[in-house]
Length: 98
Image 1 (cartoon, rainbow, N blue to C red):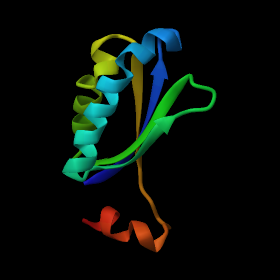
Image 2 (tube, rainbow, N blue to C red):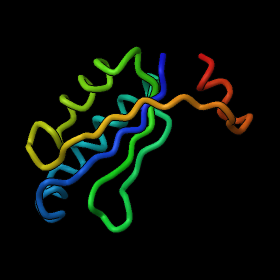
Image 3 (spheres, one colour):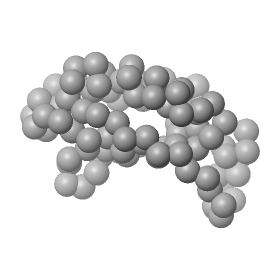
């Protein structure tokens, strides 16, 4: 498993993005329940969001992005960046090493 930072860029005005916000959050919730998402939330100002998660590889991260309701409704695009944590808080050890 590899850690990825996913930058979500809104491609439509937030008013349109917000129509799919509950559906998007429900989708993310499944990732938390499955144990592969660490954190997510909107950027400030609300021009997109950030999602941090573990995926088998970049293709798995791209598949996750493709199935996000934001992507499927064409209101956002993902920028996916692999990340190798070298130093981290002890509280993250179980998540990062599992």
